[in-house]
Every structure is written in C-alpha cells, then in structure tokens.
Image (cartoon, rainbow, N blue to C red; front, side, top):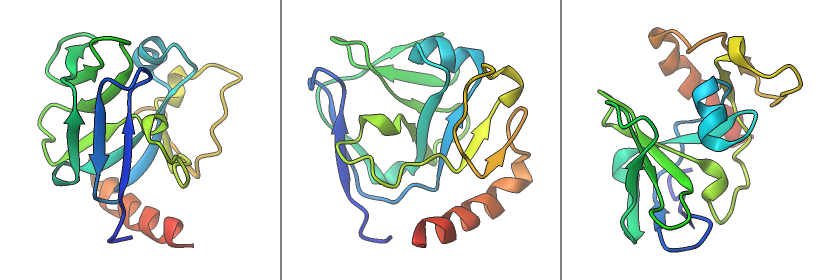
Length: 150
C-alpha cells in the first residue's frame, strides 16, 4: 500500500485534506469523550503518518477540551476532523468517515470498551478495555498491514 492516496473533508466542504500515506492502523474508540464529541456510540479513526497528511483547503480550529491533545474541527460546520495527540507528533488521528473513499476503513482495534454502550458493536478483531499497552502497538501495526493486504 505504498501508493495509498485519498482525499476528504468536513461535512460542508470548507476544510479539505489529502492523505498520501497508508494508515498505520484503524480504530474505533468507545470512550465517553469520543461518544460526546462524535454524538455517536463510538468514533472511527485512522492513524496516518504525519508526513502523509495535509490540510489543502480552509483552516481547521481547535475544539473539544482544548487540552494537550489537539482536536481539530471545521470552523463552519463544526465537523470533528482529526486529532494530534500530545507527545505523538509522528501521526495524525484522522476521523476516517471524512474520507471521500472510505473503503478499507473497517476498524482493526477498538479501545475503551470498558465505557462502550451495550449495543455498540464494531467487528474489530482486537478489543481493549482501555488503550493497548504501548509495547503492543508495533505488533498491531504489523498485523494490520498484513490484514489490509488480504
């Protein structure tokens, strides 16, 4: 998937972005914060290498809790677009439903299942009550690469 290219944008189209690197992993997060920010049972995202992500139109604004992890939104329609997690500048956590082509964006891992709504099912092959242990990510990303190659 070295030639992986996609584009996407917010609901109103004022903010657009380009992705030129394959996701490292796709996720569903069941934490109550994601439930509230997405107004849904969980949020869907793809971890994109930072050098493979570019905002091409508009100026997203920081929203959410305005904490150390920066959550970016469209200033007009307020779509939650991506997150730059604190201390992890090497990737952007992109809300994958905002891609124009969402094929292949099935969640590979689901996190914070300890907070999930009882009816919420994602079908992700890996589930964690909170976040995966830091030492698990390298293996998960390798396994995700093999999973998406099928």
